[in-house]
Length: 110
Image 1 (cartoon, rainbow, N blue to C red):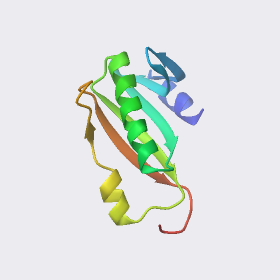
Image 2: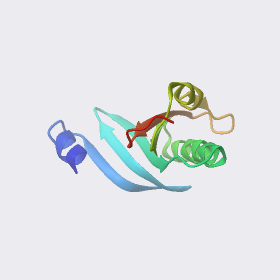
Image 3: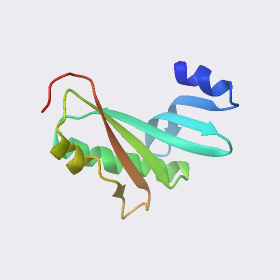
Image 4: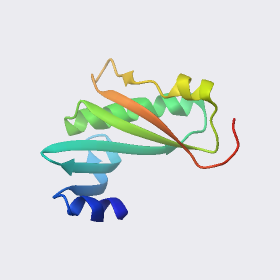
């Protein structure tokens, strides 16, 4: 809600649970003539991480954007794993760039 109210003051718009041809992306943000996609997940396994990258790329393709942000909530992450997982992913099938970002919600280091 904060983001919606904040961007309204700048003629921006936020659309939660926005439908794409491949499901629903969590947030679409439109501002200054541009559209941004944001998908949010909880990090659980490497397999689920890879599935999320592919899913986000498909959402981006359906929306006609070249880049999408994929936010992962995680209890903790050390610098080695941050460097391993917060790597820009270029999907070979869709051509969409996915930028994973980890949001730490705990206080311990993994």
